[in-house]
Every structure is written in structure tokens, then in C-alpha cells.
Image (cartoon, rainbow, N blue to C red; front, side):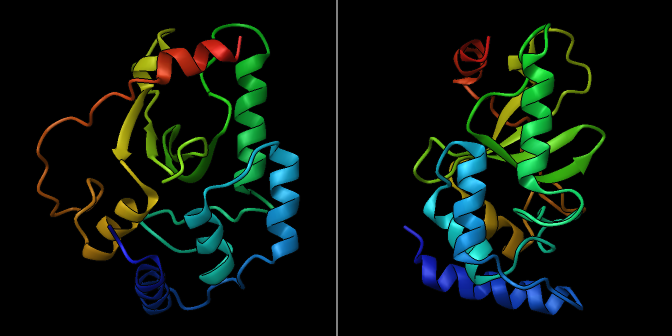
Length: 181
């Protein structure tokens, strides 16, 4: 079990050390507004991350999306992915899964907000045709674990990462995508 207070202190220290200018943290009002727009609650660790470290702009490679604000945000990307998923065809983005980081090439890190620990998922749609559940993988069992890999430099996205094979498929993907139809 990770001490969340200690984890957030270490995340904040790494974010400050790796970024010249961090955006200010999200306000309580912004988090409330985001949850109202989204229609679901965010896991506590994710709320604390946005409220205590910064409103995005730090983290692995392409950095976390801001929750709300100008330009691209986690809330806006969620709405766009859900709209695209609901407007005919096969559902590709499940409800209550918030994109937090765009890896590029259509790939996202996303948090399953139905999971109390905030399971971090990888959406990797490249090469997937129609069977969208195959695009979803578990990157980390919890947001805390995912942040630990970033702090320690051991994430799959790191150049020197010790890759031990494929990520495991997200077992709930098929059922969760079926809910969106």
C-alpha cells in the first residue's frame, strides 16, 4: 500500500524538477465542474493529483492533460471520444474512463473512474479493426502504481525499460463497451 501523501510529494518534486513552469493546481470548483460535466466522480488519487500537484502539464513523455481549461483537456477529450463512440458504428470508448495523457498515434493513458484505485488503462487502437475491446490494456492496477513507475523511470515508455512482454488485456473492456451501445 502506497502512502498517498508521500507519493504526491514525490510526484510534485519530480514534476517541479522536470518542468520549467508547472500550471497551477486545479481548484475545488474546477474539479466539481469537471465531475458535473463528465457525469461521474473522479478517483480520490486523481483529484488529489490535479488539486495538489498541477492541472496537468507534467508526467511521462507527452504529460498529463489539464482537467479543464483552454485548449485540449481531459474532459474535452473524453467528450470527443465518447461522442465518436456513440455516433454509430462500434463503441470504442467506454463510459467513465477518463483520458489523462495522449501518447500520440491515437494512443491514450486513461483512468477507469469506476475503479476506486483508479486503474490506468492503455488505449492502443493501431491495428485494431472493429473489435475495440482488443485495443484496451491494463497499464497499472492503480494510478498510484502508474505514478510510481514514472517516478522510478520504469514505465514501458522509457527507453531503457525492462520490457517483459505484452500488457495484459483489460478483461472488462468487452462488457464496458457493450454498455455504450
